[in-house]
Image (cartoon, rainbow, N blue to C red; front, side, top):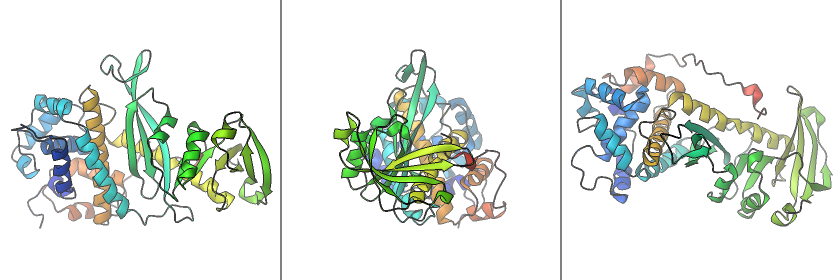
Length: 389
């Protein structure tokens, strides 16, 4: 069925094109456009992500070298760096943000049955942010410090399959905790965060939404113990308490009881204190949930190393957000492809294979059957340092 088609066009088959065109129509992306549509822009930048292109000139040279294959890749216009630069500056980034949300919904359904590593049926999210440094002279809108620029990717990661269900792109000055104001908590879900998100008014909003949170306590946290529950020191859990806050502000902003769990990491010889509003799960399970939060750190590290979000093709806010959302869409379509084709290779391996074979005319299943299940990944993911934050 795929004889004579490039691998790139076969990958694009996994995109919901009807939804893409609806997103374009919603923001009038192709209004008065004669050449180089929003789809052409998306495909060019997706090609750049898959083949690690570093600049607009690099993209232009690579696609022009493809020659007649452009038509079979779905790109209906001649590619030039000036046209692509103009599209990145003008086309509304929300087109690609909305489209990515559709891909998130598809990927979430495909990975719903993935193992979490914790004996728990509920949905578990990890919330964190990563900072991408920018040159303030080129990106004056992204002021971070006096002489530095940056943008932040605030990400809510579904830990079943490492699917980013919510991403907010802000300048580097936005405090991490403020993103909690933008989220709509899902009843029954768990939100795992580091202590940078410890704000009792916002945590109480999660509590009132019938959702659960797991976070770290700060050193000067003021509380009063109500009850102590039995623990097994062999598991590393030193105490499991029901407490109430006694701080001047926290007493009124979080009036309900909290659960305080002290865990000792014997390997690192560190004492860790967790706070949660979940009283039903075993104390050790709560600590394991926080340990699983490390997946969001690995996600940030992975996309920074394997997707083009550190070198940008444009300097405007619109161009940066467009590139980030198309990078996320590329990640998601590869994740969807992996699941639907039941590929055993990791996302890293799939991207490595596609990067060198993307213009080959080979059936996609055959392309991956010729490769081993795993290719050595030089990235070090030290799972023993999960609590070392």
